[in-house]
Amino acid sequence: MGEFVELPLRIYICSREKMSAATNIHPIFHKLLQRTDKENLLNQNSKVIWLTGLSGSGKSTIAEALEKNLHEKNFLTMLLDGDNIRAGINNNLGFSDEDRLENIRRIAEVSKLFLNCGIITINSFVSPTNDVRTLAKKIIGENDFIEVFVNCPLEVCEQRDVKGLYAKARRGEIKDFTGITAPFEIPASPSLEIKSNELTIEESVEKIFNHILPIIKK
Image (cartoon, rainbow, N blue to C red):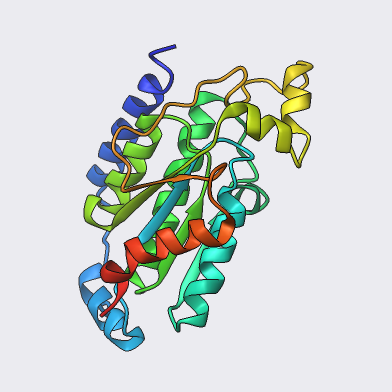
């Protein structure tokens, strides 16, 4: 179980090295308008706010409310959510170890594009292991990655079970379901922890907003 994503992570690093070594790739990033140009235009500092936690912990609900809060205060944002991403750019991925890693890699790369456009990106993904979250942080950049652990006891998440996924997992209808038949590793050192079973949505959003405001404000 300790080798949950070790092999695919090595594969990922190897593939990145091969890609970098290709002679037919000529990036033009240095010729483009820079991130600071766009941040100055938008009067904000772009960051990636990464909400991680079990299914049913309240990540998506908090993320949606946070985006509305920031929008009302004239911040330009983009919200990336697990189901939306898997219905689009990642609709060819399953839930194997390799596909879970690739799912996060693509999300992180997309997040970096928004980051470089000066946009504050709010991500809501289970991202169950420290390895996958570390991968996302390495792609996005440690100084731009704000990890928010939405902490909610498994039994509370099961009671909520809005999508009926826990019930299906308990019946064996869903394989490798995080929290039931696949592990969720508690973040080692998140930027912020939200105990969503103890706080209202409004209180959760206020706590995140107060944490990020000094960081995103010009």
